[in-house]
Image (tube, rainbow, N blue to C red; front, side, top):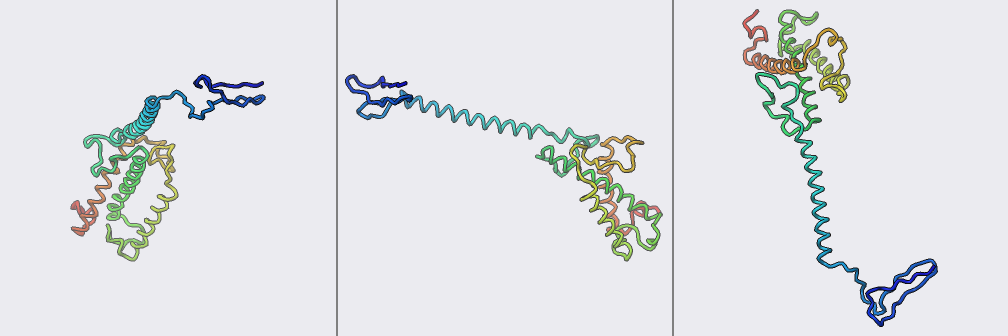
Length: 229
């Protein structure tokens, strides 16, 4: 099958040059060799470019708007731990500008520090009345660290804390922040709202700092600071 296409825009009287090849189609051009015109005006071409630019800009702005909206959608003030009388408790602004994943890390750190502080606050009080065998001569409070027996004891606590932090207390994103298991099955016997734990942990952190600072200033342990013997 042979097809020969003749340019409609060729001037009258000029022969059209084309090659007819069996099974193929060829486009004939005027013999003068002038550039072929496709009928696309400069104004039309400029309009197409402008529309493409506007469309690309709108697409990028839309994606950026969706992303920024997703980031702004997370509000730390609506999470657990917002209770009376303080409401949203973040006096140092750690959660400002944080997304959900970053806030989760802060919440885990808060819960861990709160739990350690609750145990530490008891540890600063109980030795005043009871001491483990072999530690009878070890003073109460932070003065115990500088003694022959207290130094190794503090090292044991430090290594134990590191073991829990790096090995035992691994975060599982499928669970609530701070949920590292319940080895003693306390959850089967009592139900404690997470806000209670968070608030008690916050109070314990302030309490431990107060006990240590007061001991450094007065030289009295946590019990003696209350005027007790």
